[in-house]
Length: 513
Image (cartoon, rainbow, N blue to C red; front, side):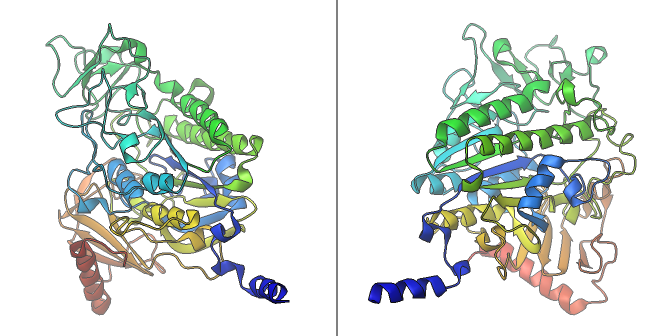
């Protein structure tokens, strides 16, 4: 009788307050992160010029967030915050990592991978890394490259070490350059190795994709890059094959780990420059290489989804699709992204894009799907890639280390579409973190603070410009999502409160209680 009464009592409890682990249903986790995709680049978010059916399918089967963010408007700081649950502006050295940059995440700091690994998960990262590798003075490109992902909790890694407009164009698998011939050692440096080293300046006539600014040093595959390198010819990849390799490695890893709980970070390079999608996507979008690269990213999402279905993992896996920052058009190469965009608005109704602390810099597509567990819905709750660390730990039933994830909030309830669940109350947004430019959203209000006095890429539909702006601007996003009407004078009480709150969060060293 007591047992039956207890059972009836448990059944009567709202399931929404019980974590998944109570039922032994810890999900697998996959985060698929695009690179430079904007709020308006996905048809589920209103794009008419680009059709993204595979991303749309996940949106239709899961939660599509209208206020989903990354924490920074450039690559490295967002990735740092995603892994560590800490705002990147709190740590020096988290700006855009150079070709020979050392690992920017200190070994020993809790990461999303290390916490899930301690909970019994197999962990992997495949794709663009751009968090530095090794230690000073430079990575040992011809030996074991450490510290790296393994020292941060990843069991397996297959990486593009920096970003593809920076050298070298090789893969690093589990700490070693894949396919490297020891008779042809790889050298990476900040200065030309010899006066006759071919560059995008001296051999511009040989390029298959011209540069517009910067990106004019070492040439590989007819494209000049930032930085210098020689050797390693057998290990070098072809730009057009990057997405296929990500998918190939991902599907193989999922098949190998299918019988154990797993966490996979799949970091695409699309549509970051240089935009050189596989030949089968060329011309398909009608918007030039940038549009074609977005279609390639959508294909990658579809291939991962198909693999989950084929392996019987879709109902066991929480998939998050997001981006590391907002969109940019001409980002150093002549690929006619501006000229061929037509009426397409990469940031949708938002102002700004990559490099900017306006909404378009960090508000991006953000979708969470756990098939059969997440009720399809559209959510206006605020969530951020920095929150995935604490949220995944909660869903895995693993406590967050006392000093870990200082700015990551558990928003697992809204990721699962639970009615009544709340996202984060406020969010700090940053650019590359070097100039002290911040965005601060709290509810409907958005404060923009430019310590530099200048804003970069605040109009995505125009060529990149660094333009003067006031030190502070205040916007009501509920009425003005495009951040066009400054209310610092009209709403002084809100302005002063937002300034004070932002300063306090920056000074406190953490925002999670």
